[in-house]
Length: 138
Image 1 (cartoon, one colour):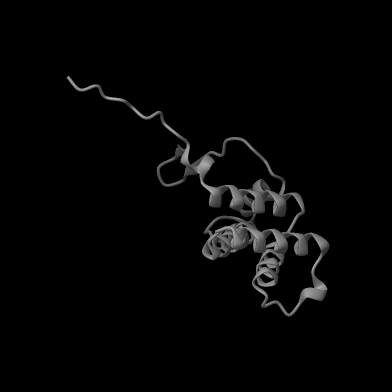
Image 2: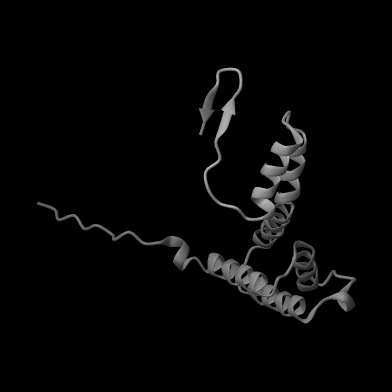
């Protein structure tokens, strides 16, 4: 009778060198409050195609050096490009939400309440009443 051995579950991301490098870049950019534009500038500096080096903060130059080192050690360029896109989407999220709320067919007061949730970083439960049927929608 043949014995079966099972391989323990392994968190692959924990051991993926590219994920580790990507996380380190994101942690560094978060810690140093690097914007999406600065993230792109760091990428261009790392690739040697930036023309705006003189306007880069020290932290952006340090991030570019990390990127360059990581790319030499196998970090895929598309991972950095995806990070830039994600950062830009994150930065635009509030404006996109405000634009969405402004187009809703609700009163100005209701719009102010919805916008204040994000602006004032409120948390809780929001109940909306459907006026047609008189029921709360949660």
